[in-house]
Length: 165
Ligand code: SME
Image 1 (cartoon, rainbow, N blue to C red):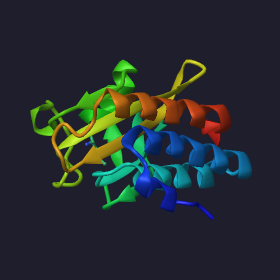
Image 2 (tube, rainbow, N blue to C red):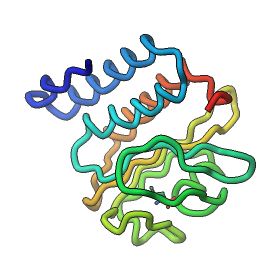
Image 3 (cartoon, helix red, strand yellow):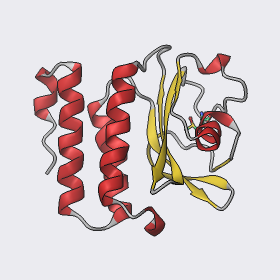
């Protein structure tokens, strides 16, 4: 069972370190890649405050398709180069968006979202998709969240064969 009680008394960085510990525990105790990324989305949602959506979009052919997530139902498909997620894939760069309403082409799946952090999932030089986080709060994501979410994806990459997803 996941132990979430300790989080209550932690500062922000301690929470993010604990998030990585929970993720490693999940990844080292289960071999199914879909189960692992599903709980990955749940681990982020449980450990990060002030999120309304956290999950994966998986690259299938030339578009992103919705993967495991936590939050309200979301857009099923995103074209490469469209929206924050599609731009992250096209540029292969992390997108830290303080105010989504100022991001040209932002795709609004949940009207509650005001800021967004998207980490491209790149393994052996191939893009497999993105990790997408949304917050109802403007400027929710800082360099700290960016750093730990990059580590989160790096940890996933150590265990997940994205071709199985
Ligand atoms: N806002 C994203 C779409 C996905 S939802 O946030 C879950 C985008 O602009 O790509």
